[in-house]
Length: 83
Image (cartoon, rainbow, N blue to C red; front, top):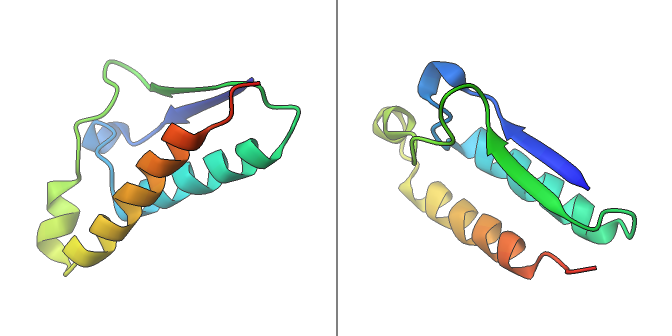
């Protein structure tokens, strides 16, 4: 079993590009590993995730990039194999 913990307490684990990329990469690697039969994603400290990181979105021209990353992550979660 793989346990991933969101760790951006300063932003209440808001999902920014870096975190979305790390999650997608970790899930893709885990899906390819026959030794990983399940994955749990949890939030650190008192919260799971605040949602999208609105501060990052306001600072940069990220909507297109963010929109590309979200479907990749949700598709990876949805396609994670049941073993």
